[in-house]
Image (cartoon, rainbow, N blue to C red; front, top):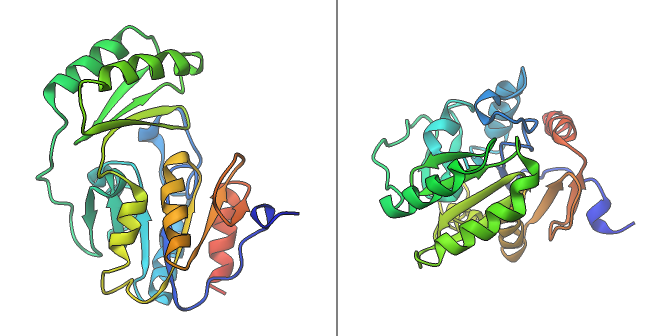
Length: 242
């Protein structure tokens, strides 16, 4: 058995814990607007954050304002792949950068030709969801790659039934590295738990900074350990509360 197939070790008191949202704390659903924390998980992660002296953050590709409606405001929240953040007790700043109008228009035109595909505008990040049209992935990727040739600051990243056009600074690894210089996280051991390709950058950064990571679900990964699904993540976090 490789290390990646093993369940993660206990969280030490010196850990800084970063948690993805969709597919990690919650099940994936066709409609992202229908996703909320399972009953009782607000309390679990708030108590775990207190146990870690505030060194717990939800790090998500969701827009920060949207994320803040779904997780407790008493937590650190990093949204938009790290482009936006809010500290515990802080409401999201409503001033947000926007994606170039020409890029939005071009992607909207591409998406409109595919039934079951929808565009979600998350400030500067554009998410193209095709869970309701799973056979469209390759075609969409080719079309969007062509569109982005005209926008040097943007790149395309694949996720689970989603393609995201992101500015280069939108990267969970960069976000984790910056977070580790904040007072609540400084000097701790970074641990990242996530399920998607967008989490791989944070897995790698956690390792680079002397920490470790957990992949949720199947698939190749650079993470150190693995849990099979969000139910196992929830059970693991509850155990850590003792």
